[in-house]
Image (tube, rainbow, N blue to C red; front, side, top):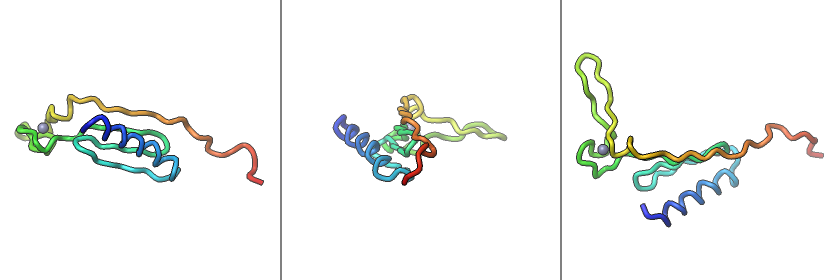
Length: 97
Ligand SMILES: [Zn+2]
């Protein structure tokens, strides 16, 4: 993903909470997942389809009787970005009229 596309995705994520205060939006672009609602904006890494280890599955099962999912390093070693937005007052102090 280029920086320009990432910037456009972040601008879209910032505009969505302003347009629809109660709606949440999730967007997948490249190997990132963008989630935005009125409280936060999250950018989380996703498994790469071109990964030779997991082939986009994100991990694999290990162990015998009690198998556990081992996360692939193609997404688990990348950092996630979370921006908390300012909380809006739940109820305004003044009546609307
Ligand atoms: Zn992988």
